[in-house]
Image (cartoon, rainbow, N blue to C red; front, top):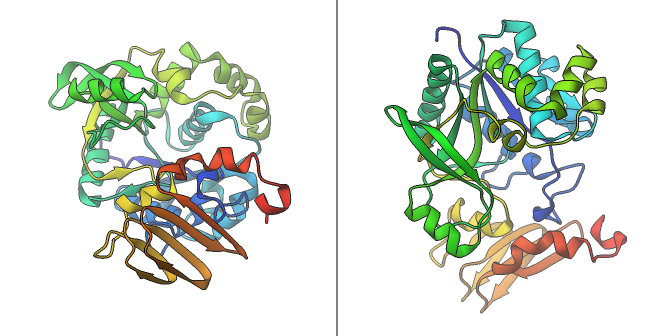
Length: 345
């Protein structure tokens, strides 16, 4: 593979589990949750050595396109692709592949990641993505990176590696939906990998598999031509895993071990941000005394905590959220019960 790969970053969604900071106008990927920069900016900086700006596409909600272009001034304006409606990752990645094929041909290699991850070992991350791109080009396969698990996480899907193809590259035996605790422990013990959502493929290979296996998206591609709005209006929402990868025989997996986290909840910040000596991760104007294992975000008045542990405290915009680390993953259920004047403040 001589030409640099194309990088596609999925930057849609609202990140409701980071309420009250995350809103439809300023969702998770536009917030400085892991570093002093928005997560999307961190993502693009990590990817910059792999692909130049003119080989980088960002797919986002139409309502966020202007903010994304402002955050990423190095990208050509046409490389920020506004989705007029959410249509699932199969539609988003198929459209990105179509766009790359128009510009660079069907042999161009595409890497796909999400905008809202934390990566502990950036050098290993880039090396793994480069190997995935090389493997996809050489094998003419759809390659996914499966994360070597650190725990039996029930919030993630799993990949079971099958036969060895070459070196660390395996065929995928099967994809497994989010398991319960006992099954997750068995999957980890059996050598299964976390399903990260990192992909590499030649764009022509992906489009061939979409047309063969995913009528939910293929029919819309055939009818819409180069009309993006018509395509997203016609595509039936489906995830790339379900619509293509679980139906294809050309899927391979490469293990990755680089401190990946999908930063799914406020509590996840305990594992990706620098903690103080008591295991707290404070941000903003805070004062903690005799407190431990707590996430604190103060965007405004000073937050003082005394004699507490394992809490999440978020103060922003005249509203304060207090919950436990354990219940931080339940915010979506909470939001459904809140009055609109509180939820949408």
